[in-house]
Image (cartoon, rainbow, N blue to C red):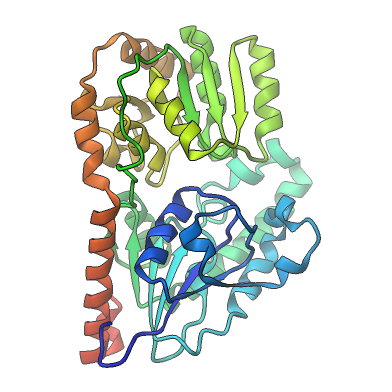
Length: 383
């Protein structure tokens, strides 16, 4: 493809357990490289798109553990060793899509490794308390986890040199890569399927919608509290370890919150279209959900930090909330619901983030990097 002989491509992904933002990136890469082989710690068969499933998929020793899909996160201390055991010696190009350990896969010495970095590990760097703080685990367990996460952060930083080039999902993540890995990154925004996610003619309802993994840093407790104050029903799509705690909070608040669990793409699209507003209460690295909602013509109420500053146009495609407080989000909810947003303008903004744009930009990155490394030294290629 890029040289006189075909380039042998390996794709490396942390794990395959569902179609979240990272898997939607991988889906496009699998379409662009249909002859690639895919390496991942764990593959729950049938949980990802046909484009991903049809590749030759290699998994780690985790795959052989009974019921591992229900507790793989608890195996985090094993991930560094497991990712290093993949044999990538046959491949000329390694493309890793990484939010955990995929970026540390060992490519052959003469191969090119490009990491599309979804984020450096949040829990090992700047969000330890949200995952493993004393209020969540108790003091003894939290202290033990801090030792483990400090060790993981050192490994994460040490192995950052294994990628020749970093591509970040947002300028926000590029800053984190610079801070934690001391590496520069090119920004290529993730793909949004604007062909699938589009408006229809139905009149929206008056509920707020959250589509999210149920994990601490997503701040869904803030969404629950804000909707109670605003008197707006809330629907939550997604699963995760925080579900039980969030359901108890909703019951304690005595407010109308519906936990919908996992839903098909068709169902999620329908929920976007019918929502009065879609909420993003946490500080996101990028946030694919706000753009899917905007592709459906619906406004977003988001925390004015992180990736939302790059995906939501304040006062045009939604509202940005400066304070991570229930009252501030409740006020923004009321204003967003009462305000006549232009759904056509919202949709037009989302179209800038389509799949074809992502594929073209990544193709250009690959060609440029392969060309630089084939004509120059490795040092000049490690921007």
